[in-house]
Structures are given as structure tokens and as C-alpha cells.
Length: 516
Ligand SMILES: Cc1cc2nc3c(=O)[nH]c(=O)nc-3n(C[C@H](O)[C@H](O)[C@H](O)COP(=O)(O)OP(=O)(O)OC[C@H]3O[C@@H](n4cnc5c(N)ncnc54)[C@H](O)[C@@H]3O)c2cc1C
Image (cartoon, rainbow, N blue to C red; front, side, top):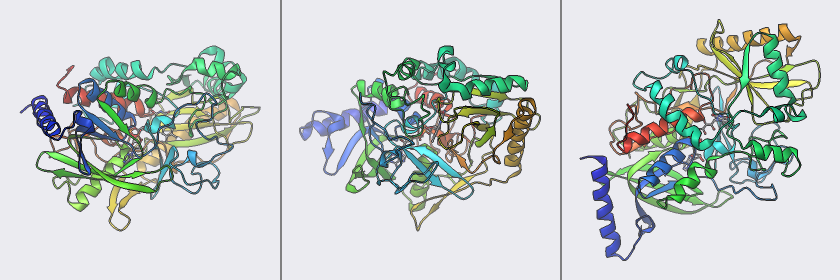
């Protein structure tokens, strides 16, 4: 039976039940402690936002369960905390901040979370909008050649290039930094970075960034709180310059009238139920993280979009506890860091290193003789004047993995930071900096830092756990639509655009639309 027909039958049966107990709207119908709905999406980051919009537009009643809270940009410009005065809003349920200096804070459902693993710390977003709340907004498409060094040929790059990447860009609206903004004092580091690359004969260019540059102009003119220009990125941008998902995909999904977002709902388990449905159990928490109630939902179609670590944890727990018995042994495998490595370079004059965000420029060194590499200049609050910081990305092999720890009831993360491939990527980045240093008389301020990643990818990958359209093997109505699908790397680019484009492709297949 086709998914469309099944969906219609489920809708009719549910409406009949709802009508018999006097409930008129399907997604508001509560059956005791359990709510029944046609589709549930877990997580509201890139994969979840895309899935929800397309489900809503198809008229499918959908609930999004999101562990974090909503963040509404205020006129006063005080939605988020700042690097200079961090408070609980900065960090997910932690007594201290987790980036830069560790500062004591109130325990709160803040925007940035970290998974501390063996060999790696993996950062991720929390809240309605997921990683888009904390990201640098870099919206970057890989080349076809590098794409196929990571992804299987079952994914047609030309189709992504023609249909899905443009579709995502049409909603996120990324664009390069306008020259008049680049020429301001705030973006001194970005300009020096481009000049230094030029002197070294390396290709450098502006990146497409999902921000509203008009708002950044207003920051410069003193009409909005200085936020992007002050280098604030990871705790959110208070001026409203960031085109985060709550302000595009998710608000469009809600406007369809078929999608409801439930913030502060932490999903704890997923199970197969009654043959062809799923039961999702979650904790409803308050903003301090205290559990207020346990709730469950039953759905016909379940979309996992809790991010690489969140989705993999739910699947590994379901496997360990026997609630999804047909999951295969590939769950948790093929995980990687996207080759992330941070560097800081000392130059011969002022750089204003803490200003001018988000990351606006990149050096692309795809024909590096050791390995293809890119490096993006980033504002960093804790480095001294005269330094330029940047983030390198490479093709990480998916050599990492997650396992389920029954005593902590969470996942353990393992990353072989010293593997041959990781050493090769380190050498490729070092070689790039040697060229830059020779041409510019600069020096590396510290060893390259590969101890953390902002780009965790994998754990439920295409071809191993899921088919090429995100459907989990063994479960016809269970889908993964987030970064878990991707085997460790988006081929020398930041991942959000590729995650969203693949999610668009998965949803087209689910809704029986194809562009092949
Ligand atoms: C500091 C930082 C900067 C970054 N900058 C960039 C950039 O410039 N460009 C780029 O392309 N990428 C960037 N990234 C990476 C990007 O944010 C991620 O690749 C992307 O968000 C992953 O999308 P996703 O859909 O897989 O999951 P996410 O966007 O992480 O969304 C997952 C959502 O699920 C929720 N969730 C998790 N577990 C549960 C649960 N049990 N129950 C309910 N909800 C749950 C989370 O709160 C989150 O909202 C950055 C990341 C960080 C941390």
C-alpha cells in the first residue's frame, strides 16, 4: 500500500475515533496521557525544520518535539546572553559555560550544548531552531568532486545542485558580506585574512552567510544592539541579524496550520507499537530543566532529527532496550568531526579579532598536495589583538563511533584523533599555514586545536542504517533526516546546507515527488 493511501486511512480512522469522543482537531486529540498524531518530528534543527515544513504543506498533522525553548528576538536586543556577561541562557543545563573561559552560571535551558567524548568534544545547539541558533550561518555547498569522496553514487549530486541546494537557499537567504560592511573597522580580520591569502597565492573568497546584512548595517549605524559586529555568534545574535530556522522554515511550517511545535519536551524513548505505529515518550521540563511531567505520543510516521548525537542516542537506546528490535548493528558507527581544527595566527598589527561576525571569508585549498582543506576566519572573544583565528575543515573519515552505556543511560562517543587520516588533515592545514606565514611574516600562535568539533556527523548513515532517502532499514515508517545520515564529513564545507538539502530530498521521496 502506498504511504499516501496509508496516511489517508490512518487519518480517517483517527478522525473517526476523535469524533466519537468529541474531539474535532486531530493533532489536539488526547487519548488519556497519550496523544495521537499522524507524524512526529523529534528535533527542530535543519533536518527537523525541513521535514516539518514539507509535512505541514502536504496537510499532514505533525507535532515537533524539541528539548529546548523558543527564543524570540526582543526590540531591546536582550534575548540572548553575551560572551562578556554569560548567564544560563548561554548553555544547556550546566553550572558553568562550556566554551572559552568556564564561568559559573545559573542552570538553564540555554542554547549551546556539548557532548564530551573520548578524543573529542562535540558542540551542538539546543532550542527551537537547533544548531541555527548558535551557528556562524555559513551556507556552503561542496563541489561535486569532493562530494563523491564522501557520499555514495546513489545520491545524484546534479539533482542536489539543480533542485535541493537552491531550494534551501531560497528559504535561508544566504548572501556574501557587502563590500561596504567588509570595509568597516569591525571586519578588519576578514580583510586581512583575504589579503594574506592573496599574497600567499591561495584562493580566498567571501562565503554565503544566512544573515540579514541590512540589520548588520543597522548595528553599525547604532540603530540595533551591536551583536554580529561585536563578534557574538555562539550564544545567539541579539540584533536579529541571523536567519535562524525559527524565523523561516519553522514559522512557515506553523503557518501551514498543520504543524505544532512543543518546546521543552525531551524525548527519552521511541518504540514500535501496535505493528505499524510508534510510541514516543518524553519529559516535559521547565526552563531550569526540572521534569514536570512524562508524556507520550503515538504516530504513524516518525522523523528523527535530534542531530547526529541526539538521534543516534535515541536509536542506540531503542536497540539496547529492545523497543526497536530490527535495527541493525551499524547504528552508532561511521561518525566524524568534519575535520574541524581551530588555529590562531599572530600578525604584525591590529586585527580586531573579537569583532565582525559571523565567519565571512574562506581560503579554499582543494588541491593542497597533502589533502583538500578549507579554512574560515572566525571572530573569537578570548584572543589578544594582533591575532586572527580560523576554523579548518577537511574530509574526515568516519572513524568515530557511539555506543550505549547502560549505567548512564546515554551514549559514549569515541574519536581516534591520532588516526592516519586525522594526521594527514593536520599536516594539510599546517602546510596551508606555512604558505601563509612565509608570504606574510606571520606565525602560528598555538598548535592547531583538533580537540573539539562544531560539526558532529553520522551514527545512522545512508547505506548503513538508512536507505538513500533516510528510511531506516527494517522500518518502513521510520526516517532519519538530520546530520546522522552523513558519514562524518560534508566534504570541506560546513554541513547545514547539505543536511537541509538531503532532508528536502528525503521529504520529496516520502511525499512521492521525484526529480530524478
Ligand atoms: C557553535 C556552532 C557553530 C556552527 N556554525 C555552522 C555554520 O556556520 N555553518 C554550518 O553549516 N554549520 C554550522 N554548525 C553546525 C550546524 O549547526 C549543524 O551541522 C546542524 O545544526 C545540524 O543539523 P541537524 O538537523 O542534524 O541537528 P541540529 O540542528 O543539532 O538539531 C537537533 C535538534 O534536536 C534537539 N534534540 C536533541 N535531542 C533531543 C531529544 N532527546 N528530544 C527532543 N529534542 C532533541 C536539539 O535541541 C536540536 O534543536 C555550527 C555548530 C555549532 C555548534
